[in-house]
Every structure is written in C-alpha cells, then in structure tokens.
Amino acid sequence: MKSIWRPSELETVNCEICGTKGCAENVVVRGDGLVVVRCQRCGLAYLSPRPKRQFIEKFYDSSYFSGQGSEIKVGYSREYYDTLQASIPQQLLQILHKFGLQNISGLEVLEVGCATGLTLSKFHQGGAHVLGIEPVEEAAKTARELFGLRVINSTFEDVPLECNKFDIIIALEVIEHLLSPKAFLEKCCRVLRPGGLIVISTPNYKATELFGSKWRGFHTSFEHLYFFDSHTLSRLAENCGFENPETVYQAAVQIPATPPIIRRALMLVPGVMQSARAVKRLWGRFITHKRQAGGVAHRLWVGLQKR
Ligand SMILES: [Zn+2]
Image (cartoon, rainbow, N blue to C red; front, side):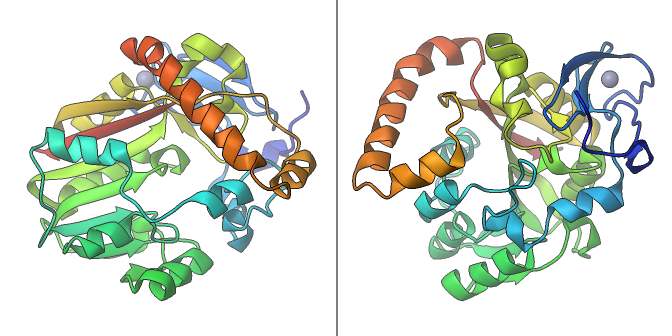
C-alpha cells in the first residue's frame, strides 16, 4: 500500500517500555500506509516509522473536533460529537468505586484532553475543583463557554503544574496519541499527590485477537501512535511510579463502516439513527459477557495509584 507520507517526514522509534530497537515484528499496514509493529520483548504495539512531531501537529487543527478533517481518517465524527451528553462515563465511575471513591466533592481533578468539557463538567457539578487542559483552541473555548470550566488551551507537556497537587487525573483517549506516553505518565505522577489516581481509557489492542488486521483501532483514527492492552499499559505506568492497576473493559460493536454520505442521509430520516443505536446497544450487551471474559473488548479503562 502506498504511504500518504514522504520518507523524509517519518522517523523510526524504539519501544517505549523496554527501549528495545529493531526487535519488533510487523503487525499490520494501515490505510495510511504506515506500519504497526509489536515489540517481541514486551508486547507493546506502536507505529514505526511514524510521522515526525511537526507533521503530527497538522492533524490537530480546529477541524479535528468538527469532523471536517476528512482528507484522511482523523478526528471526531460529527455523529459522535452531536450525540454525546455531559456525563461521567460508567467505566470511569466503576474505576473510582474500585478505589473506594464515592464522593468527589472537594477533590482536585485534572482532565488532560478535556475536549469540550462533557465529562469534566460533571465533576465540576459534583463539587470537585476542576482544571482542564485542551490543545484544540475551539474545544477549550466551548468548554469554558458551555460549562464555565477552567480550561488551559495548551498541550499537557507545556503547562507548568504544581507537584503533588491533584487527587485524580483523567485522560480519556489521549495516551494513544502521544509521542511519549512515558513522559506523559511521569509528569502525571509528579503532579498527583501520593495515593492519587490516574484513569486512562484507550482502544484495547487485545481486540486484535478477534478482529486481526480488520480491528477498527487500526482504521478509524490514523493519528494513533500506540496500541495498548491492559498488560502493556499497566507495565509502562508501573515503570513511571504507579501501582495497583484496576482494569475495566468496554465492549463496542464493530460494524462495517458506512460511507459518510449514506450516514448523513440516514441521519435526516427521523428515528433511523436512534434505532441503529438501540440495536447496537442490545447487540453490545449480548456479546459483552463472552468477549469481556478474556479481556477482549474494544476499549480499555485502567486506573492506577501513585506509589
Ligand atoms: Zn518492548
């Protein structure tokens, strides 16, 4: 498959967990022509070679959140964006409960990549002191205007933060985008208080056991650089000062991609999308038990405590 990237725009990287070079086997060639490899020593899957920093940054302009970044498959789909409501995801609540956190009032909560603030606003309403960091300016602005949240428009690595400050850090669908998940987890560890909690969600690489190279994690978001399962994510976090990993799996139905024009046309027909979602929910419930038993579900949620 022909790459959309020029060789000069790409760089080869070592394994982020064990630092190994040249010990990775090819897993799949994605639609953008880039290769996902898997470290034969520790099992971490990642993109290598991958676009250099300056070329990756062009993914994340304002079109990322408007679903208009359609030249290549990147960004939020309009459908996803329109149907979300402010809420704390069930899996996030489950993890908080596993760590005995029932009441969030008065806690210091940081969300990295808070997007338009849908989740963080619920912590705010629950009495937590919240701070969001969001690199996409338009999304940060929406979070401030819609929910009155304190949101810094920047990347996490560029924001100076007090050490030992936060009780909870939330990073949903963030870690797979980062050039260095290790540097990210190390900084999270510094700014959490001892015993503080990080909750991460990310596509679950283990789903490749079911779907192989057709797994949607390889084909829906070309900006993803890392592909974790519970084992590799916990191991990397433990290397960075975390302990006591708790994992929750989230089933999602993988259905064949519908061309955007047909999806948009369907959305105009009253009730069609609602029915489709209801069918997906039911089917999701049906397959959940079987597939979660082996940890094979599309999304992975991991909570860890600072040592
Ligand atoms: Zn490795």
